[in-house]
Image (cartoon, rainbow, N blue to C red; front, top):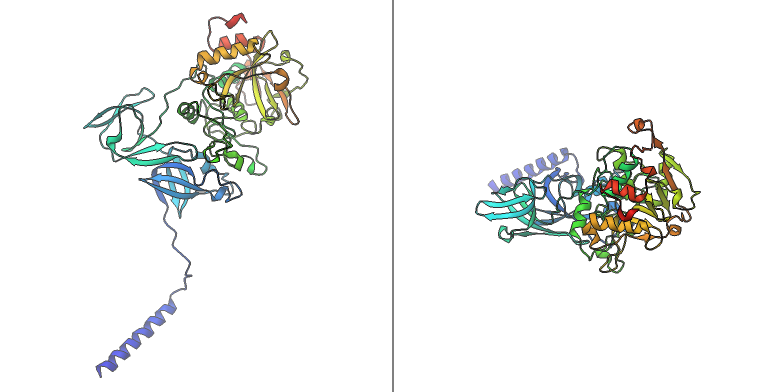
Length: 488
C-alpha cells in the first residue's frame, strides 16, 4: 500500500517538473553569460605570440595573440581592433613597458600606461626596505612594503618577465616600482639634448634646432615613427605614431638608444625572430623604438608647429619619404622648385624628398658642400651593420667642409653616438636625384615675424637671419659656440 502511494507521489512530482520546464524560455546550449570586464593593473606587455611567423594575412593583424605578464604568469589575449580604431590600442603597447589594461571575454579593450611610484637606481638595501634614487635627480624614496619582485628582460622577439626574490635585488640595479611591486629592468639616464628648439615657434632656427635635438639619440628603425597599420588601411594619409606626435624627444627613443650596444642592427634577414624589421610582414611592432627618415622630418615639423603632444595627425608628418615635400607644399607651407644645379640653390630648412629617402638642409659651405639633418641606417664602426639613425651629416666630396663640420659636432656633442657611428657623407648627385617618384626640393614660405604665430599664415619666419648664414655659422649659433669651426 505504501509502495503504491510512493510511486504515485514520484509520478506526480515528475509531471510537475516536466510542466515547469515547459514554462522556462528555451536557452541555446551554446549560449554563455559574458564575463564582466576585468581591470588588470601593472601588466607587462611581452609582445606578439609567434613573432616573426605571423603577418597581416596569416592570421591577420586583428587576430594576433598578444602576451602579457600578470601577477607572475603569462596571459594571452587578442587586442580589440574596431573599424574606426585603426589599431589604436596596439599603437600604445610597447614591449617591456607596464600597463593597466581592461579585458572582456579574453579581449583587451582598454590600455593605459601605468604610473610608476618611482623609477631609478637602487642605492640602499636595509631591513627598512629598498631605497631608490630617481634618474631625474629627485629625492630618493625608501619602499618598506614590497609585495612582489619581478624581472623584465627586453629582447627583440622574446621579451620576458619572471618572478624573483627581494634578496635578488642588488645595489646599482635599476628598477621601476608600481604600488609596492618592483620590476628590475632597464631605466634610462635622464637626457638633455645639447641643442633644443622651442615648440610652436615657427622659425627656420627652431625647425633646425628641433631636428638637431633628436640627433645622436634616436636609432634607425624602418617604420620607426609610423603607426601599426602603416599602409594597410586603404586611403589613409595619416601614419604618425605617438612618438612622432610628441613634443621633445620621446622617452622610448631615449630608452632604446641607451639600452643598445654595438650589436644593434635594425634589420636581420637571417634571423626573423630576432629582427626589428617587422614591417616586412605589414605590421610595425617596433615603431616606437627609433625613427626612420620620413618620421624624423615629420617629428621635426610637428615640434615646430605645435606646443603640445598628441595633437591631430596630419599628412605632412610621418608618411612616405618621397611625399614629404609634396604634402608640405600641398598644405601651403611653401613651394617645390626642382631647378637646382648645385648646393648654392639650397637654403637652410629646405626639405628634399627623393625615392626612398628625405632629408633637411641645415646650410651650405663655400666649397659647394652642404650640412644636412636626417635619419639613416649608417654603419656601426665595430661590426659594420646599419642602425645609426638621426644625425648631422653631409653632402659633398670626401673631406669637404660640411663633412668636417658634421663630424666635429657629432663627436663633441653626441659622444655616446659617436662611439659607435660616423655621420654619413654622400655626393650631391646621389642625394639630389629624385628618382622615379620623389617630389624634390621644398622651401618654406618665409613669414614676417609678426605672422609666425598666426594660424592664417603657413610657413616659417627667419628673425635670426639663418637664410643668410653659412652652415658653419648656423651650427655655431645653434650650439652656442664662441667661434666658428675650421674658420668656415
